[in-house]
Image 1 (tube, helix red, strand yellow):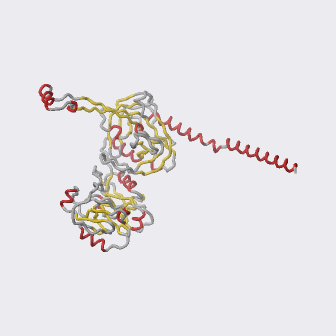
Image 2 (cartoon, rainbow, N blue to C red; image 1 turned 180 degrees about the horizontal axis):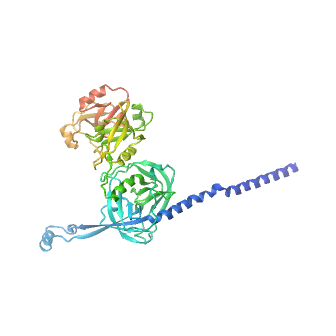
Amino acid sequence: MRKNTNFLKKTLGVIACFQLGAVAVMLTSPVHAEEPSLVHAVETVAQKVGPSVVSIKTEQIQYDPGRAYYGGDLFDQFFGEFFGGYPRYEQRRQGLGSGVIVDNKGYILTNEHVVRGADTITVMLPDGRAFEGELRGTDSRSDLAVVKIPSLEMTIPPLGNSDDLKIGQWVVAIGNPFGHVLNDPQPTVTAGVVSALHRALPASSRRDTDYSDLIQTDAAINPGNSGGPLVNLNGEVIGINVAIFSTSGGYQGIGFAIPINYAKTIVDQIIKGKKVTQGWIGISIQDLDYRLAQYFNLPSAEGVLVLKVLKDAPAEQAGLSDGDIILSINDVKMRTCALLSKYIANRDIGETVQARVLHKGEEKTLRIVIGERAPLKDPLSQPSYPRTGPGPSPAWKGFEVQDITEEVAEQFRLENITGVIITRLHPGSPAHHAGIREGDIIIAVNNQAVKNTEDFRQAVSRTSGNCLIQTLRGFFIIGN
């Protein structure tokens, strides 16, 4: 028995030594040796791209007429008679941002909101040199601007191909927010991965900025880094960072960047002194969901639903209709509204594209000539309408409608719109679950035009099963 015990102890000792040896082998194995390579890659990118990332300080001079500091008729008379008016007080507002030099001629790419309204622009390089910047052009829709400084002899980072980005790919965000503040012009570097592609953010009612196709990353991007480059591990610029202001005013785990492929076209037009133009075909669109895909007998929710075709627009001239589904353009699949909008925006004015569309269940190909996009308000935007006048129709699927009379149109500022307005919506009803809201304007039911409440009653009386409701805000499927 003692011999067996000694044998067991020796055996366990050998196994323990073997395990310790295995651990030692694992600690020195090439698998762990790969980890520092990522660190070195970020270091290499920072050394390669950092010298071209600049700090931008702007100053805006505003004059206060001074009347706010005084008051009353006596002061009006005094300053008017003896001084010809109130003394003016000068106010200087300063802003900070980043930018990246894109060629040796001194052209710097940054965000439009960084330089908006600036009277003076000062650019500081990482080596401490400072220059007065000349604003060469801006495009508020893309939130991009180009600033010019004297020609420089330095290495410029190449512009990459943002279409090749993959979710999970490592990226580096570089900015220079402290050059004018801390007397330290060295850029800041944060690393992360591409969290998502083709992200769309809500449009601001105060601006015409289109954030419909952004790169999302978990690399920290704070306001001072706005305008700096997002770079891949090859040192190629694949995006321009844009700080989306949060409730706390700082980074909250999500950053965004404008794809460099989109920026290239804008920058090229600005540098050449051309008017910044974007392609347009004159349609309002909406993404498909699974319910709409089922209604149109589609195998998946890939495609873009045409909500409204504007009168005399290129799309109408080509034969596109409300309710059509755009499947592809020039053999490029149009999976989302963001993809379609950016694809069209990057086409040349006058270029002809071939659109494969689904029209009333049948596929057809249309040739559409790209027009120039004008700064128009979103045709889908509308205020939230309260309940209104008498005479609503009986409730159907949980909502009531009313004719758009002259009084209603004037009250809610509706111009040249026919249809019915939803005046009451019952919570928990099929219409409420479908996404219908009070104040929506219904213009068609199951592709049948609705101009008044009588048209609406006739249309819904012929429906069975799922019903397709077209409003100014979008298409909705109302079930039983």
